Image 1 (cartoon, rainbow over the protein chains, first blue to last red):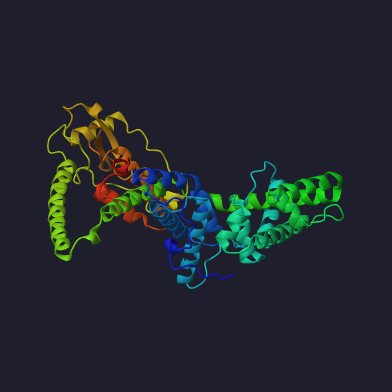
Image 2: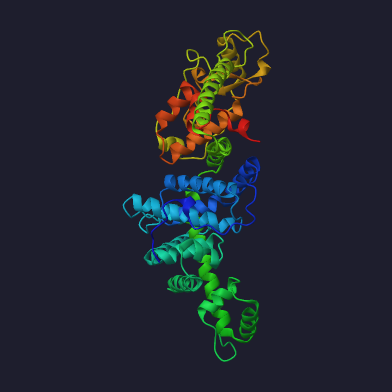
Length: 194
Length: 272
């Protein structure tokens, strides 16, 4: 699949119109979009951070994605699976931003940065805590060594997306989603056994 | 998938655990699992790997997420702006002939200028500092309350969760009221507030305290709280430096609100 994002969020191929007769009232739409923001903002921002977006860029993209959603609904377009829609738009905006930034983001999850503080387990026993944070560092290293698409699949699934939503967000087939998830979980499972 | 003859693949086990198999396939796989220890143990391994990953994902990223209140307020403001601009565009402008469009545009500009002037006068009147006791105070007197900060670095301010504003001692409150000449008015109508909030490194110094009115001004303490949250978030994410935040809130917090929320009125006023 190509990593090339579309020109803009609103020019994405959108789902078919459902009874696109009269656009809904703006004040109700504003409330609806704000409510959705309340439900999805953390999930979306976490996903964007997990793929290496800096926080400031992530916050801006979340805003942009929800403004695009507002326009999408205001034009009377499909309300089918708005969660999948918003993730897809945010993902494409993130790729676009990455292209503008020269093709790479710093990783927020560099194993060297993954200090004990960040990954410390709140276990009461110091030995357990050390073992747990060592295990997490190992898992982090294994995770970082995985292909980018595998990590995206894992992060999207962890944020509650179905395989179909993941496939649509990343522009890959359903079969590819289950294959990549199985492959990456098997690697993580092997790392835990060591 | 020939579950009767062979074991399911790991992929099928994962799809079953994720509820991604069709009902018929899921049922056959469930039957196989009930008879097969090996496949059950593989399913458990997958579940453990999922658990490990989710813990790692959340523990690594959750501490990086700033509170949602500021971004939510910003979104609401932008949505209001978008909704109003869309409404103004939605009538059939292109149905008009060229000269009519010119006429309408000229009239619209005149009306906009008139409304702008009226609005400015109204807002200027509402934001005036008090020259006499008892006048609602929306922004403090810069001579009496220039704003004083104790913390000067981002690390100092962002190291811990934001401190709550401490109760100002009654004796200090009295001095603030006296300085503002409202000792004869009802002090119960005012709250002595910090100009630069302690969450942005503001000091307890009397030059950082002012009597904020409970009276009917739309620029009230709740609106200022939203600005304080937004500025702290920007400072702690590195998008704004602390001295700029302290300077902007102390010079004219209403102007700062308009600037940082991209709105002319408090967002609570814009909400339906």
